[in-house]
Image 1 (cartoon, rainbow, N blue to C red):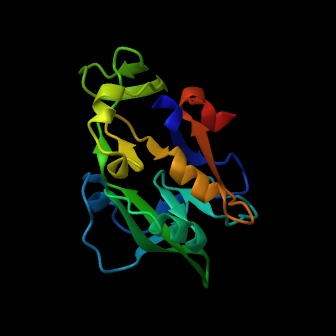
Image 2 (tube, rainbow, N blue to C red):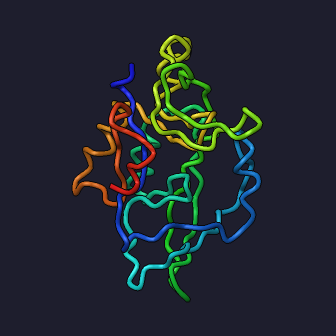
Image 3 (cartoon, rainbow, N blue to C red):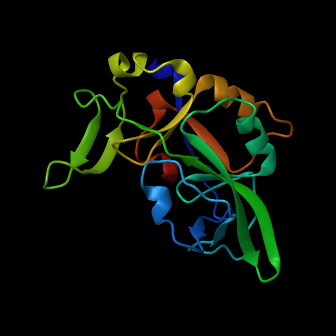
Length: 193
């Protein structure tokens, strides 16, 4: 099962801007579906590239995707994942429509014996995750259709099943701005490589 999962992250580029909230994000940090009838308001985050290039995927750290990527995600039932329209203010008078991928379902599937991580002094909160190994016995108890895409409960890590990765990477032209790192190859330094 380890080989079936990928960590969804942004592609390393100084030209692809990070995104930031232009409204309160509190409702999106509760680990549940958000009841919103309004378009989410986002802006470019810091550090701001001198010539930002808007691509198919940006992060908040939650993925924020183009409409063509959102269409792929909509084509598959994804329990625990909410696709919410988001307007990104790129510059004065230039607002682009994207979709926030709110993975509110958080699964506690980290194998604490085989993963490499650091805890805060309280012994409760993870302060670092160097290597992630999934607890396959726990994962097996969740039907595949309910774990195609989810967020790890222990840390802000977005996991995607290989079948969904194939659909996304099958787009032509290939999507820009995202990477799917095989779980076995992922560690906390991947953002810098």
